[in-house]
Length: 240
Image (cartoon, rainbow, N blue to C red):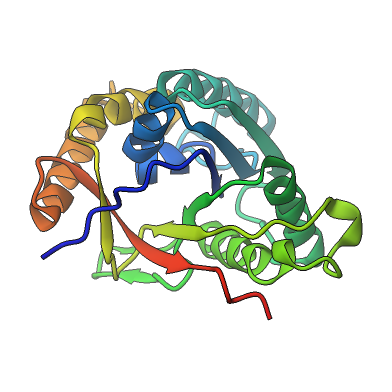
């Protein structure tokens, strides 16, 4: 029987590569937790400035537009805060500086749950393989969580150590836990469709339909109407 994630976290930090990634990956779970009283925060690693089929817009114009869309989506979900680290879209590098930035936010916000990309998920059938920024952000997040954020000698200037209890990895080929988003699927749809720059030549109705369809597929696996699936990692004890 599928396992449902029943924890109601106090503080959640989502770490994703692009402005729309969190809404697509886990917007329902974030909305659920925010509605339940959790502080839900988002860190976006890149500016999203290359994410469009429209060649008439500059990367600078697109990054500004995507930041505005992100702010709109954040209000829909109920985020307590969000910030964009600003690496160029498509050029995110797994470097010490990125890990230190992520450690700094983990230690400042002190989440009990962190949500992010599963970097081990690469090939999704014959039609899609995972964006390099997703993979890079995923590895950097895991490296920031264990052991760096929990041990004082890693980045001592980044604040007092903090041990994250649980990591939930989205976009995974091996989900082992699900969040029931039946009551929040329309919030997820609304947050995804805030990212209008991603729907060139469309009103976004296909995206809304895709969100509902995917959530229904995961719901069937979880035994509920709508769900989001994750790979769950318990991080206590993984610091050394």
